[in-house]
Structure formats: structure tokens, C-alpha cells
Image 1: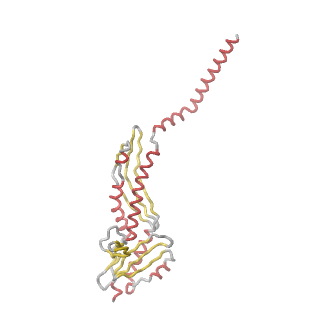
Image 2 (image 1 turned 60 degrees about the horizontal axis):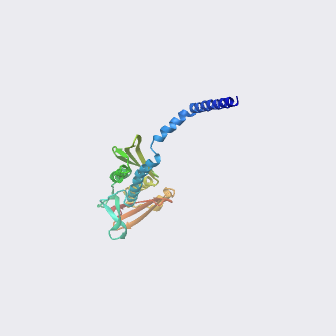
Image 3 (image 1 turned 180 degrees about the vertical axis):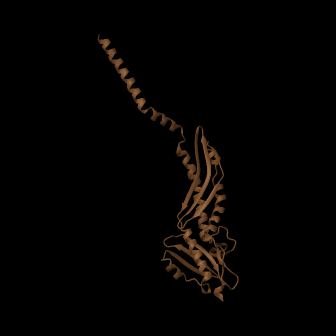
Length: 262
């Protein structure tokens, strides 16, 4: 009788264990199934370097281009410029002209739509450089299959920031896992748009003021001290250097205005 009672206890315990397991599976089975499916997906930590890689290409090339724009009067490769701030012979800032004339009259505005002009300069320069910088063969050599769509890049200049947007459809596959990414963006917190407005103001003053004279102190006061404006004379040209107060980024541009010589 004692042995029969022990067997009965074990049978009851076995049934209880089966019931408990069935109950647990009923409650958490769906969650466990989802977790199993998630484990099949890409480990995002292995894909994140791709995003960082593209962002780094935009970052490094974008920063270089924006610095060139500031030093060279809004142009990447100036064709008509005044050498300035020479560190050594042949190592000068090529400051392009924003307003120019060879006559004894007001200079004419060479960049009447300067913001759009600069955006186009940046887009043209960066489109090839960023595209070439993104070497997808490095990803493929790591065992991934990579399909790339059409590469597009655009630049938007705001008063206190410049945004570079890249649309580049990428499909990364490995086994049964797929990851798609098509948009990349980088914002540079530089007051380029604000300084372009300053350059346009100066050009208008050069054209419309008596004898083409611009009083930088008066202009700074009119801007409530928000911007700083320096003017240096070099040969027959004026080099203007503009920056926003407490910001190191500068836009320098050249003006040749013979009306002041009359």
C-alpha cells in the first residue's frame, strides 16, 4: 500500500508539471515565438557602422567645402579672385569678387542670388566627392550583399545652419536578413546664411552709397552688434570679412568699386 501511494504521488506531480508547462506555454508562447523571430534579424550593431561610414563621408567633405566657401567668397574654385591672407607665395586665400567693375562707375553685383549660387557650389562639389568616398566594396568584403540605387545630394542653407541631405537607397542582405536605408543627413551649425545676407547688404551699399563708401561701424550698429564686419584695402580692392558675434566662422569676399576714385 505504501508503494502504491508513492506511485500515486509521483503521477499527480507529473500531471501538475505538465499542466503548469502547458499553462506557461499558453501565456508566453506567442512572446517566445516573437523573440525567436527577432533573433533571426540582423544584429544592428554590425550594420550601424555602415550608417556611420556614410555620415563620416558627408561630415568630412561637407566641413571642408563649407570652410572653402567661407574663405573664398562663396566659391569652391574661384575663377576671378583676389589673393589675400597669404601664408607664403602661392599659399593664399582666393577671395572671389562679389561686386566688380573696371569702369569709373558703381560695381556690378556678380552674385545677385548668392544663397542659391552657394548652394549650387556646395552640391556640385560634394556630389562627386561624397559618392566616391562611400566605398561599398568594403562592406561587400565583410560578407554582405549590397545593392545601391541612384545617388542624390542636395544642400539647404539656413541663417544659422547648413544641411546636407543624401538620398542613396541601399539594400544590405546576409542570409535571410535584409536591411534597407536610403536617407542620410548632416547639419553643420555655421551661420553661413546670415553672412550671405551681410555680403548682399554690403554689395548693395557699395552700389548705392555716395562714392561707393561703406561705413562698417554704422552697419554693425544697425545690426545691433549681432554681426562683425571688417574691411581691408588691398590694391584697388576691398576685402570684407564678416562673422557673427561669438562665432569663429567667417565669410570673406572682395569688392572692386572704382566710383570712389572719381
